[in-house]
Length: 185
Image (cartoon, rainbow, N blue to C red; front, side, top):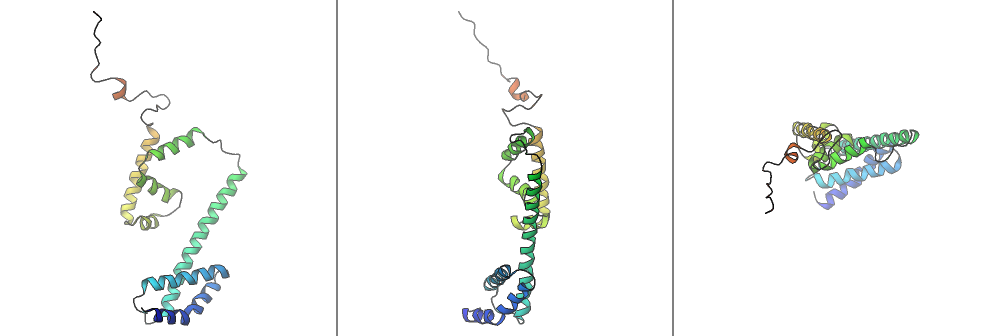
């Protein structure tokens, strides 16, 4: 699509796309949605479709759905924060929190990312797979393995940091080849 063709597409259909947004959300968001629709059109259209208005409104629908999902996630986060404000303050450095933070820190970056996408970003397997650029099945396998590794980190303390009631690992407790000391002559 040439710049002139895109300019004509924009001139012919911007009002319809903006109107679609204005009937569904506030004016500022509608303008953002319309702008995003034409960014998508610029990137993806090699040639205008036979019915560009329908295609543009379908893109607007998806862009708007993404925006509404983003807002819902943000609202849920604000609600969780408001709920937490009403509760007694959490003691910083509580053992469970420290253990979890330390266990997460010991995981590989890919394992941490998989767990964060599900736990922090609240994405389902399909959405998280899209973020990582893998299949849903591959993501589920990664998530399962990351959860197992996190569980192992929580169960077993880091080397050099014995947990409650545990001694050093067996390999560290008893040397394989004890060093014999010579008696002084």
